[in-house]
Image 1 (cartoon, rainbow, N blue to C red):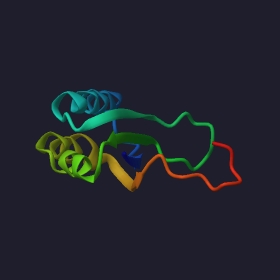
Image 2: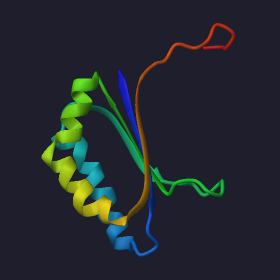
Image 3: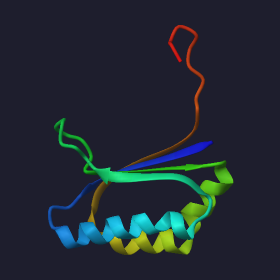
Length: 107
């Protein structure tokens, strides 16, 4: 299983309507990209100062599934039109999971 996590900081200029459009667009992706196994997104809960504003997590069977998602025209359009114009900072990672725990940590 491969997990993709992306966190963004958004501009103050992004309106509530634009945020709702982003959420609606993201919510549609699992319907049009069957390689997505699990998909979650949301705004930061505001519990810690300095956090990113928004996160997306997506799970795939393997790297090929992730690459299909990454390159899918609907995903690319969403990023270009609904998210990208409002992003001031982005961090992302893809990792295999479940990762093996060190022997001294409980599972």
